[in-house]
Length: 134
Image (cartoon, rainbow, N blue to C red; front, side):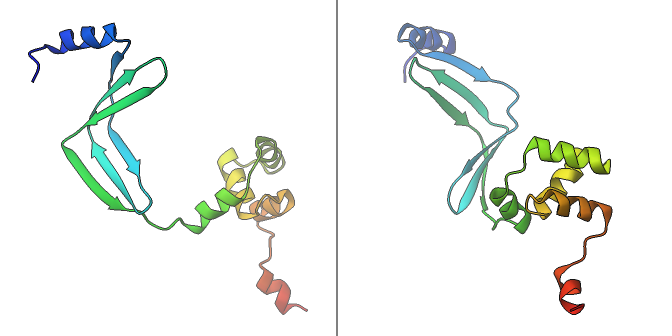
């Protein structure tokens, strides 16, 4: 191993155009793979910056793997439906609910503003009720 102090190593890397920056306060790093998640708790993270790219070095002792779970139905709907801030604002102004509740109702209504308002006002009938009344 090189007999260099961390300060000397940093100086040497700087000479080659690499800036080293320690990223402080990192609580956890997650690496998402197709079938699992690698979780590194309380890691030491360094950013090695070159003119063309930044490389992150992550060092940690508490490393564990978690299996990925299937997305919930709400997550799937969120991915399918794009809710604009204007729609959320309109529903908030019309119903007086919080923006979070308005966005949640819009997601449940798949972006349909009128249906979201009915959900929030409690007057939405399920499709079963409509099917039974005919």
